[in-house]
Length: 304
Length: 304
Image (cartoon, rainbow over all chains, first blue to last red; front, side):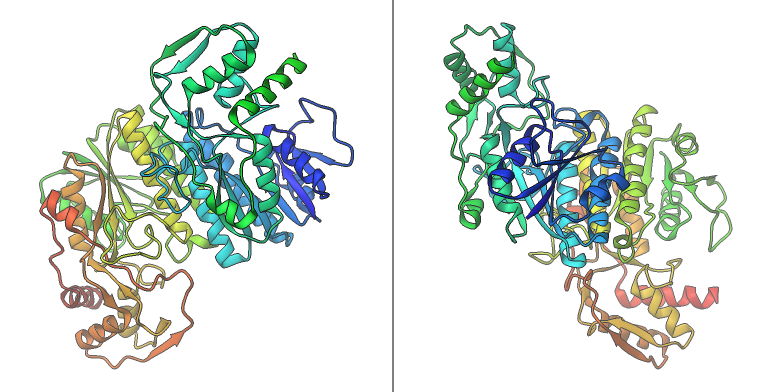
């Protein structure tokens, strides 16, 4: 299968490219910039452009069998700063992508949604896919609206969309500027012997998923014919304090931890029920949180 | 209270203006065009501009105590034709309205949502407000996203939003070009002795609400301090075939009815549970469907 990975040089995208190549697929990447953390991958076709550049994106889509849409111009922690921009760039941008795909008769679309943001404050954990969508921030509101449009386009226009609602992915090549997730951010602080800042008392529970597991799920789902939404998580809850303990154990460094006020954007507890992905794709997260943190630490030390 | 009614010359808006004036409030209207069906109302201040004209709209908001936002540039039956435009004009437009209001320290906002579109295919009828939002068309997807942002702005920015999820409003001054609802459309056909076209077999059930009842609810809700969403409907289900029978009885005309294929956008049955509005505002729909159709027929005959 020939797959276009939009955002293929990014954190998740680069691992998806690896997984696609490993499974013998042909890969084209669309991204704003070249590979950040490694040399260009042999056999991968790179096309550079902005997500809003419709004509270049149309060229990239042309002749592919499936599109994996993994980009967001915002992060959960920053999207609330400017909702009109979030909507315009990500929601309208994705609608235009869908229209362009249909115009080119490319119908298979994998969309990266958010299992952490889309349910809002969960009524039940682990949270299954049919839980009501009650996002409390712009990032999740936009993801929910996109999912609704994907379903509408499936029903009325022949699009074949599959959605991955990722939990909290982490691992090598993740950014570490403080908005992309705490594992990378905290490891970088440990690496630089800086203090670690925790919002709240550290009891917030999240479902952390190794990016290699997430990439594996994307390939299984995107190259299947299934449609609809699938949670992608470990199914296990880990507190921020536990993450810090794992980091201390893996790095062997003495960590200086300070606490800041809790953020209103944080839901107290988020764990995903991933039985649907297991049933339909035979997929389960394989990498433990301890192993995943160790892998990330190894990568960070090699990068320097 | 000084209230700005955005869309105050429109079908619903003009009745809201009447109800506000009747309750002794001071009214300013913002609309693209002057009163269509009547002379300008004495005592009402009119400001003309497009919903996208932020500076003129800001002038209109300035100095008011509350804003009633009643405009949509799309209809349920047309929004699916161009989702990017629907999102840009209505969702982004409403976000910019909210930002402008907060910049002017005007915090009270009544938003007209859709009880017919926002729930999707209801799991239960009459449908209560806490039913999951699973809109199946662009009109409802945009309304749901706006409601999520209103709640986010309430929680994090001090906006005081109240949402009316109207069922199928009808009555005098409704358009009759075929996208604004079947009561006006069918009455106009009867008036012109043209045949009435029904999508499907006429068993589709809707909750029809006289626009005067809806305007009464808007005034009660918008001038209160309650926040959140309220269904606005009759609480009763009426089929298309029953509407046709009422029209035949009221007009005394022999109707020529033809049938077209059912529309995928139509949910089979939509009835709203309006007990929350009754509990919080002492509001119930007063006008029967037969009386409302008779009132609309009288108005149409006077208009010619």
